[in-house]
Image 1 (cartoon, rainbow, N blue to C red):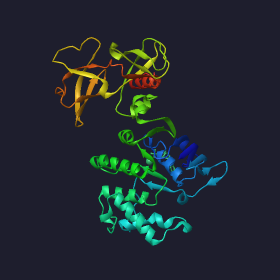
Image 2: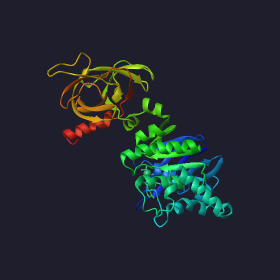
Image 3: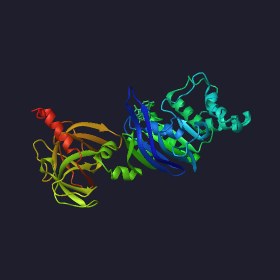
Image 4: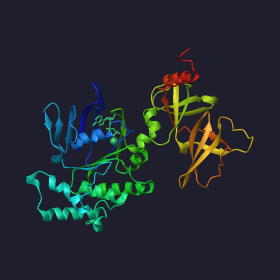
Length: 391
Ligand SMILES: Nc1ncnc2c1ncn2[C@@H]1O[C@H](COP(=O)(O)OP(=O)(O)O)[C@@H](O)[C@H]1O
Ligand SMILES: [Mg+2]
């Protein structure tokens, strides 16, 4: 349905320096899928989306929508935005304040190429359908300035789908809503997308949103895609510590590989503090290699300890610093090995009081072992902090 090949887009910065927003991005999206571009602020998500929409002129690469090239620098093809059959929801919504709700939704239908223009009656029908679908029928005559945040969001969605686009582009559509509404609109968007069967590209920096909504996720960093896969793969098999850290609330514990092993094998590692654990290797590792063990909050076994009690052999001892209620579960922030680990326990488990001691069993074999790329920069940082670098 959508194919992006070697997309590149730079902007002129101040003076002679150029900013590379999108360096080299390629991906394919199957019809009817919800594909998410996930990454930290500034990594090039919006620019990629705007190139697909035809709102930016890429430097090079190729974009194909539904079998038709809409951009190709080698042939000079550049199809204008209004001919791309795309619906877009902008982060800011871009609702026109001087128009009513109905006029806002109708607007895209009045700007399509003249020969495709619909008669007024056809337009009214499409606008009514879109408003009904978003539960906004009763607000059609309201000035668009008299809407709540959630209603503005629905209006923006109605306007994006009114022209029955082949492709729906959503740029951080929930970022302006409060947490509760965000949760609800998440499901509204998924419902809308499945009901319409429309292919969607969803841009967000929120990993929870991406995991909940997507058929496929591409993680971006500095203008390139660093990993792509379904939510399950991305969550369970992050290919780098950047992805592991960015997705979910992974704990990263540093250690050393004990016995060499190949990718996919169970590897034993010795962690700081002398505790041993094991996990699947994400690359080939040699004995003595510095590694990072990625431990999910839900895969640490936790037991409360009485005052003065020691942790069982092979387990870490930690101090509960904070509790975060998540409904059915509680996340504990536990201080151990000089850092905080995030650990998930059922809400009805023993009360873990702040400052009480706990034993942590992280040997579950469910962890992942990555090569520690950061050893150099980390040790530099430590040297900096100790003032050794300048000595
Ligand atoms: N019109 C522009 N002019 C100059 N720099 C831009 C422009 N748009 C985006 N950038 C820069 O390109 C990079 C990627 O931006 P963007 O695509 O908006 O990232 P994201 O949506 O992932 O936060 C950033 O460094 C940003 O400052
Ligand atoms: Mg953006």
